[in-house]
Image (cartoon, rainbow over all chains, first blue to last red):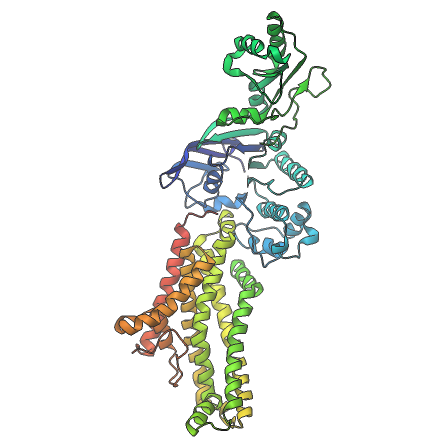
Amino acid sequence: MTGTDGLALAARGLRKSYGSQVALAGLDLSVPTGTVYGFLGPNGAGKTTTMRLLTGLIHPDAGSIELLGRPFGRRDRRRLFDVGALIESPAFYPFLSGRQNLRELAATGAPTAPGRIEELLDLTGLRDRAGDKVSTYSLGMKQRLGIAAALLSDPALLLLDEPANGLDPAGMVAMRETLRHLAEIGKTVFVSSHLLAEMQQMADIVGIIAAGRLVREGPIQELLNAEGIVRVRVAPDEVVRATAALGALGGPDAVTSSAAEPGWISVRTTPERTGEVNRTLGGAGIWATGLESGNDLEMLFLGLTGGEPGQGGEGVFFGMAGSAPGPNARGTGSES
Amino acid sequence: MRLFLSGLRKLVRRQATWVTLGLLAGLLVLIVVAVGATANRPGASSAERTTALSLVTFPGAYDVVLSFILGLGGLFAVIYGAAVAGSEWTFGTLKNAVARGESRSRYTLLSFASIAVVIAVGLVAAFAIGVVAALVGANMAGTSTAGLTDAATLGRLPEQFARGWLAIIEEGALGFAIATLARSQLAGIGAGIGLYFGETFAGIFLPDIVKYLPFNVATASVATGTATGGGFGGGARIASVDANTAIVLVGLWLIGALAVAALFTERAEISG
C-alpha cells in the first residue's frame, strides 16, 4: 500500500507539549515509500515523542499525520495493522520466553501468518535462545527480539527507535542489511538513531530535528554534497595567516582550526572547491603539506543542531592521492 | 478470542498465579489440619473442643473452607489484579499492543476476563484442596465425616460459588483498576492493600457509608451464615446490607472498576 503522493508517512505541523515543555513545535515529515529514512536529532529534540505520536501512544496537540496515504488520528488504530514499531527500549514479559513473547504479541493487532515467528527468530539469530526466558537475555538480544516483534505482521512501514542500541558489530551489520533489504522490496523504514555513521551507511533520506522542528530533510548524498568540508595542513606557525586567507572563501565562520591537531584547518565548503582552497593558500604564499576533502553527516548534524564538533570527528575523508572511494560513496564516519 | 486465550496463557505462565494459589491453599491446609490435630489436645476446654471440631466437621466444614477462601481470597485477588494490570505498564507491554493497533479498552477488558477465569479455576481448586484438608483434619480429630454428602449443603454450593466468584473478581477488579490508574505494579498493589484495610478501619467511624463500599458488599454478598462467614475479609464486622442487595452492589462496583480501567487506558498517554 502506498500513499497517493508516494509518501508512506507524512506529518504536517505536529505540535506536542508536556505541560510547559514543548516537545514538538510544528514538525513536518515526508517519508517516501520504499526508502530508509534516518531520523536524527540530539537528545530531547523530539524524536521519541514523534515515534509515540506515529504509533498512537500519545496524541498531538495540533497537526496531522498520514500513514500509508491515509489520515491517522485517535480513531484510526487499524492503520497500525500495516505498521511495525520498536519504540524506546524493547518491552517484553520477562517470565515468558522469546518465542512465547512473540506468540502473545501476535495475538494483538493484525493477524500474523503461520510460521512467521520461527522465520523471524531465524532472521534475528535468536532461534537457539528462543525457548529461554527473556529475563535471561542481554540488551542486544532483547533489541533483536524487539526488531522481530516489529516485523511480526510483515508491515509496509517500519518505525524503529534507536534499533542499534546494544547490538554488537555483527548484529548492526545484519540489521543494516535487513533494513536495506526491506526497503529494496518496497517497504518503508523510518529509523531514529544517534549513530550517524550507521545512518550514513544505511539511510536514503535523512531528516534532522532540533528543538521540536525539522531543520533539514532530503536525500543523504544531496545534503552531504551541500555540506562538504576541505581540510588543509600548513606549518603550525602559518595557521593564523592561512585562516585569514581562507576566510575569503566562505567567510571567517567557515574556517576552523583545532589545537588538538596542530596545523590542520577545516573549511566548510563543497569538496569541488578543494582546488580553489589550495590556490587561495598558494596565492597567499602558503604551501599546504596536506589536503583532504569530503563530507560528513556528523558535521552536518552538529552544524544544524547547534552542537560542537568533537575532536577527530571529521568522519569520511578522501585523500589527495585518489586511492580512496569517490565523494559519493558511502563511508564510515565517527559516532557522535 | 485469540487475545483472551493469550491472556490466559500469560496468566498460567505467570509465577504470581501459582504463588497466590499456593499461598491461599497452603494457609488453608495448615489451619484446618492444625485444628484437626489439636482439637482433642489434653487440657482443651469443652467449648474450645466444640469450636475446633466445628471447623472440621461436615457439612459445616464446607462453609468454613469457603468462607476462608472468600475472605482471604479477596485480599489476594486485589493484589493479583493489581499485579497483572500494573505489569502491563511496568513491563511496557501495553505499549507494544497499542502500537500494533490493538484496541486499548478491548485489551484491558479481555485481560481482566482472563483473570476472572483464572480466579474461578483457583476458587474451585482451593476449595477442593480445603475439603481434602478438612477430611484429613476430621480423621485426625476422630470426628465423623458422615456429613460430607449432605444434600442440602451440596445443593447450596453452586450458588455460593457463583456469588463468591463474583465477589472475588470484584475485589480483583478494584486492584486491577487501581494499578491501571497508578500505571505501576508496585503502586497498584500497595494502594490496593491500603484500600482493603482502610475500608475496614473506616467502618469503625462511618459504618453506614462503609457498608456500601466494595470490600464490605463483597463480604456481605457471600455471607454463609456461619460464625466465621466473612470473618477473614476486609469488612463485615459492621452492619452489612443483605446478601441480595450486596450482590447487586458487587456487580455495580465490578462494572464501575472495569469501566474506569478501560476508560483510563483508552485516554492515557502511554510513554516509557
